[in-house]
Length: 306
View 1 (cartoon, rainbow, N blue to C red):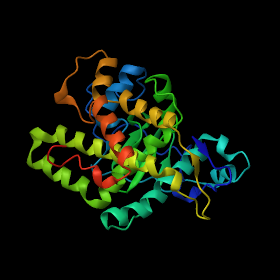
View 2 (spheres, rainbow, N blue to C red):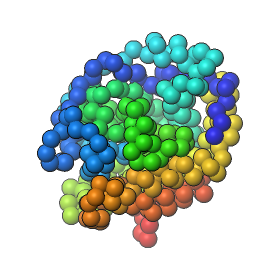
View 3 (cartoon, rainbow, N blue to C red):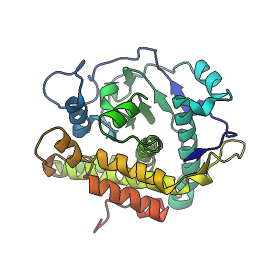
């Protein structure tokens, strides 16, 4: 993967709330892990939180809680305007967001006939308030449909590399593209329709959640296929190259966070009834389908035979 050093980072697509103390604890987002909450550390806790819906791919649909307001982007703007901007983790991630949204601005009307509505990515540290409730870093990256924003504590990537073994750089834009896949589902009404189906058929709730998550993986793959065609506001390409090794890193990350892999890593028996995000094989399959076709219309995980 090579980013274009001449591409300009649009930090207006990010809301930097790091250091603002935007709440903590897991109060507003339902994460039924049983015992204690804040302060727990270690891989078992991390993967259990991820497994039950609080981790990577969380699509919180609860109401309640207030936003903590916008952060202060001044420092981020200055950093990302510097010559060494692309050496900075936060600036690179802001540029990934720029690429993902540039793709969907074109793809959503072309493929689905819907206009794309931008979503900000909120950088936070430790905890954050959202319209879906409060969350802390333990929940991993998530999308909140109540305020149409993506949330991430960038330290998640260190956990992803060190504790789950997904060390590749391209795992990072994959994570963001997955969350923006949830934003697209929100814009298309897929997420709301799925929630209604869950209410009508609670026994099928987990299976429906898996379909939603796999579709977001497929959308991430479609973006990855088209990422080298995305540009900044002045028409400069954002990516100059994406290699097969990069795609392998995204697939590796998808496999590492499959429900079965997480259950095995936590020392628990693999129980398909508890799956909420899909197996490693399924996540690989649907990301690969999105990447191979480059067409988000092929990501119908809810269709017959999917």
